[in-house]
Amino acid sequence: MDIVWDGITGAEALNDWAATARSALADAAKAYNWPRVFELISEHREFVNSCRPGGKSLFAPLHQAAHAGAAVEVVHRLIELGAWRTLQNARGERPVDVAERKGHQHLREVLEPVLKHRVPHGVLLNIQSHFHEVIRGRIDRKLPDHGLRLPELEPLLELDRPQMWFPVPGMYGGFSYRLESPGVEAKLISESWCRVVGGSGQRHEITSEGSRLVEEGFV
View 1 (cartoon, helix red, strand yellow):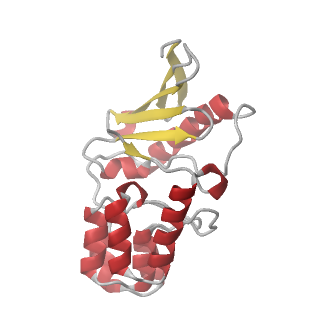
View 2: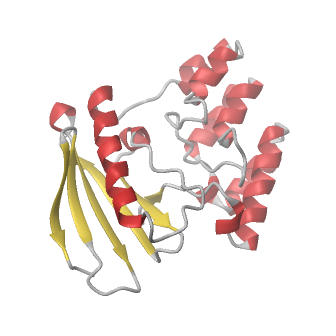
């Protein structure tokens, strides 16, 4: 199963149990209640990189640990559970940036991103921008946006297999995307579909120079 990019930021797009679970996790992380955080993540591993529904800061649990100056052991455990060191908050800060801003130098080493794939930062940002254009072209004017947070590509670089799934509320489907060919020649393969519409599939190949529709009509 692909790792999920959780782009839902609004509570209205979540069912009751998901909204309750994510809010409880955000409350525990904000209170620096790490035993409760780990208890909740063990029940809902898919929320380890999620933020509070309706929140503005986009702090995931690892951002809160960085803000708190938590023990290195706490941060290690969050990372082992799947927390991304490259995930940005609403200000564009990674957890390591939050820790530095708060003066928690003991977390510098453990929070420094460990990248398993190399793509120049500017190249990756260009690919991300073109990918977002593809997403908007597929869902704009057709679906409510639900305050969607479109995928950031940098977390892909932390994964052994740089592939994720981005479900879109109301689409009954979404976008499966994977990074290929590291370096300046990097490209993103995006496959999107709606499960209730036959022939809705589209496959795009995206580079730093733009996107190209390479197949459609499947699914």
